[in-house]
Image (tube, rainbow, N blue to C red; front, top):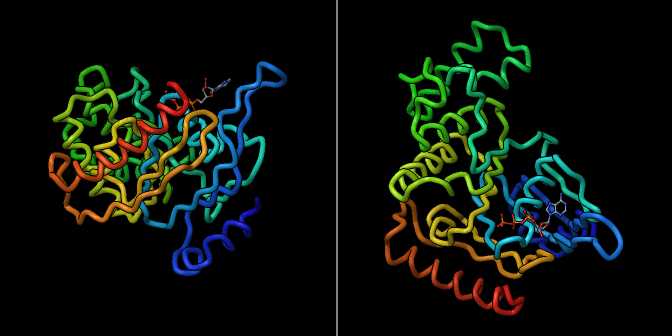
Length: 265
Ligand SMILES: Nc1ncnc2c1ncn2[C@@H]1O[C@H](COP(=O)(O)OP(=O)(O)OP(=O)(O)O)[C@@H](O)[C@H]1O
């Protein structure tokens, strides 16, 4: 399936919205022969510019594989992936992956240093990024002096330093306590809105998906295929503990359970 085929399947959507991401029939097989692992099977998915899409699915269904393909870290074995403007998306993981020997400012400024942005300009941009993630006072600290939530804020600022319009997030808040996660939901939502970002966000947590997403896309168990795609109509600002979010989460969970039961894992 080509990008043109997807456009013909979804003509009204393709016409009405500017697409940031277009995945057309994307498959990924690891290895060959009897030992081959079919991680993704003909995944077709579009994400409009400025949209926040959450990807959920059973463990091992290929969510991380999908993100790494969109990030360009690996190549699909079938299908095509188109990132509008050809910009390389920013990628954030559950682990903040900060360099312990660099300060917070040094970590945030690293992508700028690698791009040879002059020191003075770098300092200005790093200060602005640290203000964006509410860490203005912490630029001189080292990562080990920060809490888990603060380290993820640093990782977020470092990803924003790439100045990319598309953010890929793989369980970024999965290792944090519920309160910290709640605060970071507000933060990522604010940053997404302020910067008009496009976000593709992988999570195991269905409530988190309902709290954040404009859409929730469910992948089947391995090999991952898109089996459901919900539009979350709950107006923002949202609260993760509201009855409206609980109702959306319940519907997604029911469908996810069905999927897991069908595959026996
Ligand atoms: N480099 C690789 N070589 C072989 N198999 C791989 C490789 N990377 C991933 N896989 C397999 O592909 C499948 C999908 O893995 P992936 O990590 O994308 O799933 P996931 O949905 O993100 O899982 P989880 O929710 O548990 O994080 C798994 O069976 C995994 O073991």
